[in-house]
Amino acid sequence: MLGPSRFDDLFETMSRKVAGHTSRRGLIGRVGAVVAGAALVPLLPVDRRGRVGRAEAADAVANPRGKWTPQDHDVQACNYWRHCSIDGNICDCSGGSLTSCPPGTKLASSSWVASCYNPTDKQSYLISYRDCCGRNVTTGRCGCFNTEGELPVYRPEYGNDIIWCFGAEDDAMSYHCTISPIVGKAG
Image (cartoon, rainbow, N blue to C red; front, side):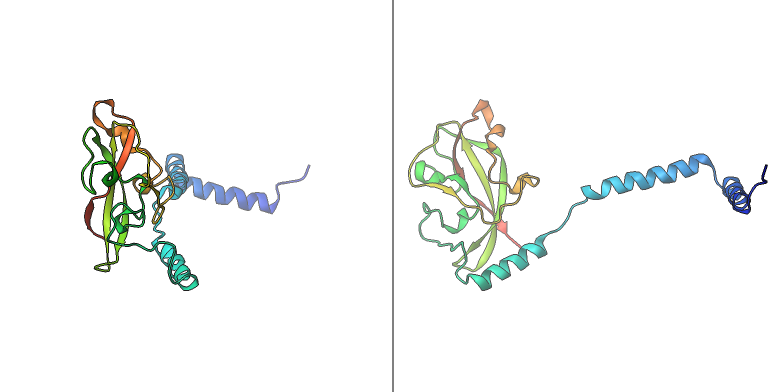
């Protein structure tokens, strides 16, 4: 039978030193903290505004007029500057206004937001889109499906594809139109 090798002796000596200076609970705690911390890294928020800015700059060079050309004189047109991210019907076409729901509808308690550019004063404003609920959808020329500034579903506060009537009073769950009040200046 052969005796223990030098490698085994060295490994045993090092293991005994480590075991003499640390506890099992401490080691398990440190390993658990590392594993939990590594698992939480994908949940941290990521700021992608720089990437969006570079994409918009590249798009401006490729297409000087841009895909979105806002105007400020026809409130019922889809390219009115406040409607840059509206997805639905404009309430101004069905008896409401930019800031109030038509009679017979109720304002949903939830909203989505977007930053829209006003060509008149050359400023961007934060718009809080809110759905008016409780009546059937109107038909006509006021159905707009703009996606300027729209983000993926994992940021629902910026998602215009969601019907926000789930927060309306008195079970008024049917969508009618959307208002677009200004919250304040963006940036």
